Length: 451
Ligand code: GLU
Image (cartoon, rainbow, N blue to C red; front, side, top):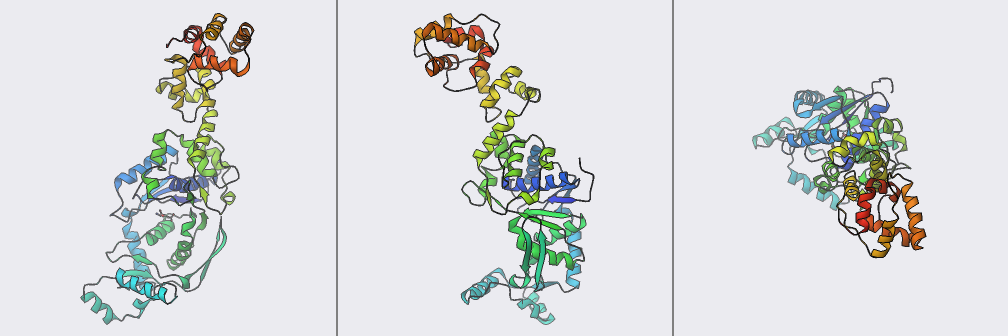
């Protein structure tokens, strides 16, 4: 649709758990932004934490993204790119921007507590910068291993965020970030930056919890001699209680796997996640291209937003309404309830999940346990059932005849017929269901016979 461009964006999950709806939103925004701008979408596994990352979680993430239809154009795994991170670290070390520090976690913690007690911000005091070569040699002789910190410039780093507007981060208010742990492993920051540079990422679109990181990252990007990409920080998705989504949500209730297994349509998930935070959030949409063409980062508000499963149910139902029979026929057949286009059109306004169609198929073909409160009324109605063939006019013809024969009207007329024919107080319009039920079954049910 859009002419190819150099736009390249990435979704960079850590394969340390399952994706929940908040993660899916990150993937979706990046995917839609790439689609809309004729760019490329990269999937990057941030798996440098080899204690917590697993191939199973990586495979599950790919499966979830495939379900949503968020196909990637570029793929990389950070665990295979360590040499590039080492090279970047060496460059920073040689320029004095990455320095070794030897404090243990307990020492740092004590220092932070002292600072807080004195009403000072708990910022790392850079004591390690004062160490001489002899001091370092002595510490290493004690068996200490350094972790490595990036020396921030104590200045304001400004950027124009595509959602938040003008942002400034004051380097002086932050601790020099640790880029390499004492066991030699890289923390998230440097690998992410090196990858963003090497894969020519043009736009970093991620949650507002990364805004301060961005100030730090821009300094590191420049220290590596590169130009920062554009940034967009969208507001975070909270759970229905208004609290941030948690591990519990990716382990369970709002994981993509849970939604898939519950029977939600992937495009309903996409439509809701793309539009929450915009003025019309609960609108169905049947294609990613259509979502992409209406996607605009600047329409996303800055306030935190809520994911409410009730909204998803509404979008799901509305999405099913839009589905033509031809598109659903294979799925109806697989569900064992392909009763034709008239059936699908009759029941789709009454389903929330696709699998609900099977319940209505059972109402058509039986077994139904008819509910007959007044056998005489049911017998009188059965006596005036019109001859077949039946169509959608039949219900009107029949109920007119029942009305004349019994003097009933309104609810007193319709509800006993619905209860007898379906065993239920609610359901699809009977003018559509009756021809599907057919005369034989209708007659039997009006006699109270379970078919
Ligand atoms: N792996 C990082 C995370 O999941 C990626 C953040 C980013 O987009 O830079 O938080």
